[in-house]
Length: 457
Image (cartoon, rainbow, N blue to C red):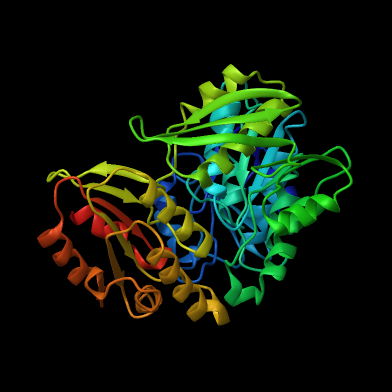
């Protein structure tokens, strides 16, 4: 962050300076007292579990020069204080004020039910070949994380690539208002957050808030193969690039294959009448979709195919997304444990089916936030597995037993299906039964923390 004065911060936050000189300069703004450094400003955010006001002592001990609070606090020598009505809104307002200082900055915002983090990583890697680029760290994609990302901007940045997540209406609208992107990418729409939103149609409407935030000079980049994003494309009146495998997409894949020797996806596209070849060092057709969005943004910003491919070859992927590791006994693990919904589980199973492996083993925990679709969705995943080239199915937890039930119903032999109550018993079975050259997929929703199995293996 580039320094702001206390007066600028108070103005942006609609706050009042209770103590401290208006010209005091702040070097950084943080919300975690453990991360405070000398001359930082600490915002006392009220979270679901912790209230930042309880950690002001810690922030001061670590060198905070100023704090933003919503109440009267103890007097600390040499500590400036700004009082606001809502500290979370203050963080957001300051981030928006700061973002608007960078008038020439281009921002690409990414949302979608599946693939937004990997797409963000790919887009940032491509743009970084030509532009100084900032991207969202990890999954800092909500009403707290996105403002913190904006506060990392500096005058050297030419592009910012921001992931936007949501679990309800109005959330992406807020994030887009804070960031003011000129490019909007929607990877797809599917059954995620159904518990909160009630239907896939409502999920689509919530995602579409990103498109609605664009002004007339903005550009939308949309998945042509997804029925919900294609419908958005049909009704979008500004600049638009569609991508996919289907005829009619602006950027269309016309050939693709998985190179088992190099463990990479190789694909040929047609763009503005030209046929171009690309590859991606990450398995899965779903990752080709993610790469197409990055390629589209590269072309939109006057990059040549070589520069785009160089970027796709240097992607710094976020953790727990299709990480491939060899275990000490020679088995291979595909750690895709960050999250799970029906689209992403099918995509991961497709990767398991296409990669080399003596035995192919799927270890699956539950998919959460599916609401009334929960039972049907899990049964359908089981049915899908039964039709794949998969040797063993292992489910973890009570809800995931529905996957086993669906597989058994679809004639997967019962001796190939195992259901365990918890991660500990699953881990014991794997340690006792994994063999050299086995290929193992680990996947489940975030709260299942399936990466712990990988760590113990």
